[in-house]
Length: 165
Image (cartoon, rainbow, N blue to C red):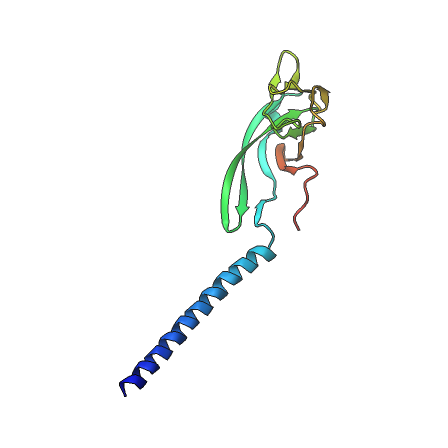
């Protein structure tokens, strides 16, 4: 009789272990499928960020500004500090450049004396309109999308980036 009671308990424990293993497998498998079918899960939130007042910008005087952008990485949402160079080219014409040189990604600066952007890494030089003046940079400075609403300069994503649906 003791042997039958031991067998019954053993079966119950086996069912419990198998049930918990199955539940754990479904949980992990579901999470993995959600991740795989949902893409990489790493993306910057699209949207327009208020960068400056157009009245604060002087024509042909670049200004480096700092702004915050929300980033979604899987289930984690974080706020990242980013910078851009704003140049007011006319009354209602403002461009915003990414702060990395298009050669190797070094941070460039504006040289007031030369009136151009200068990359200290490999001496690429860029005009106020972003075009390459000389140096190894293969293309003009990357631009952010810009729009002006109520005298406020709004920055979007990098121009030419793939749009999220």
